[in-house]
Length: 243
Image 1 (cartoon, rainbow, N blue to C red):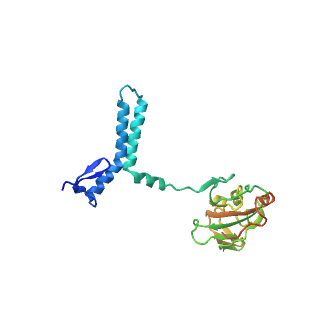
Image 2 (cartoon, rainbow, N blue to C red):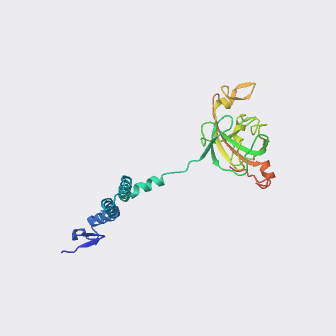
Image 3 (cartoon, helix red, strand yellow):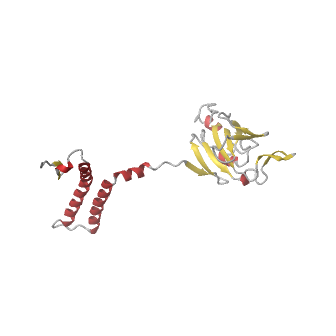
């Protein structure tokens, strides 16, 4: 049989009849390359047109456009993979005094807390990395498990670092935090409990709940700021106690 099939401007023999692998491959190639080849022909005609004297920059631009079209037409999947593989990074920053790097895992509203502001905040801590085991809070009687609910503690920024049992460096983390904001930060040993660690009692040096030279992994959330309520930025007593 002398039957032919037409795809675009190309005529295919009967051996590439519909349903055959060869016909699909040739047709796909023709559809992909045809626009780029047409642009390349137009570029050549533009450069060689009689009576015209395009500049070198114009010639390069036209040929670059034709070549780019050819590459993009030939590899549409590659560009798609690159663009879909980009993910947004979490917001990070540094505390104003000690320069601890922190990560914002939940953003807040209103003006940030400053020295002397009355706030409500809560915190939980890990010893060996975030999410490594159950978090705890430091208390007078040792490490206590911090469950899914924790009542925010009311205090003045700078007077105590949330509680008297937390390292003073925690104040630096609170500065600039907004209502509802949650940060994660690693406090190095020299800003935590140093080479001696933390003992539960001066009478019992061996009973330590924080080992020597241990960094502390803190997650802190500011639940309420007094000045934000006074300014009308938040509703009165609008804090929650769940993490």
